[in-house]
Length: 422
Ligand code: ARG
Picture 1 (cartoon, rainbow, N blue to C red):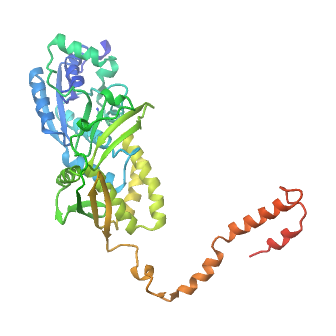
Picture 2 (tube, rainbow, N blue to C red):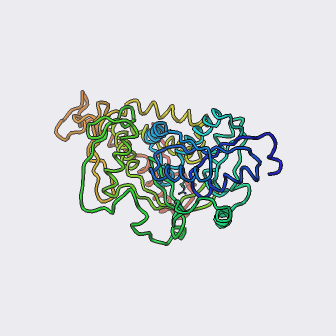
Picture 3 (cartoon, helix red, strand yellow):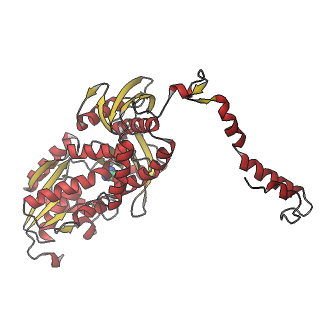
């Protein structure tokens, strides 16, 4: 740290007002030698109370604090994720998708304020440090991570805050560690660290315990992007907020999983993500209608890799551009409407329509005899060949078993009749 004292006057800190980022403020001045710290909070749809907490804490710290609105950009990123049907081990990636958006907003704002360095309060154990720095280290700014670099523990931070009279009481340092944005609310820590611990309803805020009620909701897509709910067009942020409420009331979008973090740690995670679940399931149902069988199966590999990059925060990788080219092509015709049934904690597609459906009711119907000039009887030849190779292999292997010297075919006898050319 002593080496960090020269010339570096102003540092921009990703600031939430929580314990980690609060202790970072004096540490950046005293341990790192910065003359000035500015705190930046990026709005990606956190609850109002979090901004109030950040403002209050900043005021008490006498910190120059700015809030940057990135909600629209974040919602757009969420919709890119919908087009790629993106989940990682069952998690719709809310925190992961938000981090590069936050990192970019902080970088831009820091440049406007003539900062020479960027700081975050992430620990050395999680994913967020890697996601922030994947973006920041592409700039000329210096990057510092006090909690990680100084080896701080929560216990040490709490004591330090008390000693220094830092404003941390009444904050969000409750039983669990929560990260909330438009796309998901994550709950970790506390008793949840025990994978066998069964949490009660109290961990949930966005979702109700499912009752018996059911509701239909219609989602309209244009080229894979959600554009309307029940016939009403709305902007991205509003659409997500509305679905979070609507589907949350039916308990849709609760996930309890073991997650493999980037550093190899396995952690127990709980998430709420009602809108994400509805939109992901609806979008997939639409692709099922408009894509060919081969496009559907190949897209699963593309989607899986897109989600992997998103989880790692490696969204500027050249590979992502290539994957998105495939997503764009396959979603050119993902225009249409899907009816979803919200019930008992689930969101299931129960109806779909698109002018690009790769579907012919006439061809599939039991009531028509011909499709163009193809008749039912034309399938007879196909049916004769279907499974031909399997039947042949089974016959050869059965015969080999019947022979006295079972196993190796050496007699050259019967085999000849089965090896004729096509
Ligand atoms: N495990 C998730 C991720 O890495 C979410 C972590 C959210 N943080 C929290 N304090 N709950 O994307």
